Length: 264
Image (cartoon, rainbow, N blue to C red; front, side, top):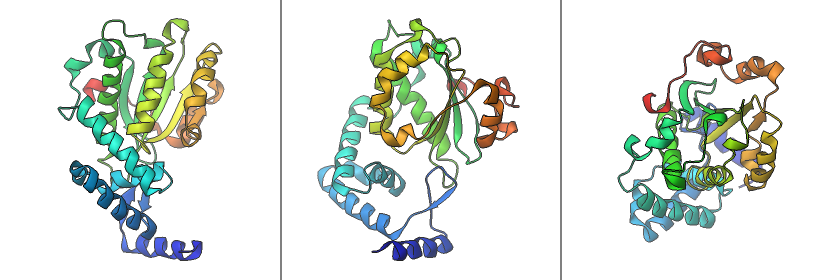
């Protein structure tokens, strides 16, 4: 199928109203993707029958993460299914499994951006290495938060991504936790592909760039394109380009109070 024909297919299916979410408004699945999804599903079900529970939207996210390569997407999904069974055997992470991470009060969720993506606010200066629960509790906390975000994002028709405001004001070496940062990247990129819509890094102190230089090479190119460093003098104006004032947190000039992740 050439590019012009593919475009005609997309336009025809848009008219028919077959809608799938990519987090940027309503996205239309095209004929090429439908074929790839069918091939991927058939291949997966032979190797892991539990894949029958996966919907087409999930299939497409993993396909897109591997540039529609069925073999690579299959490998990625098989890894995901095995990880999910082992790491989240109950199907979810409870608050009782992440008490030390919740106690840091560093993660909040409230509002949506102009594309309907839920917004999560992370305060980097409130994160400290978890010396009680260790890296395992931190990983559980990641899944706890990401599952909440994904559940919230799936409620919006045609929207399955989320936005992040990463506030690193006051961040210092005591907050530097490279092992945790790399674990977060790995979890997001390997098990939650095509979920991240945009990241706003705000109030960035110069000292933070020392940690940034270490983790930057581990960020895939697709994710790098979604990260925006916001100038302090243009903070509110930049956020308002993507977030309406009535959906913006009060602390950034908006109208919504912050809600702790466990209460969202």
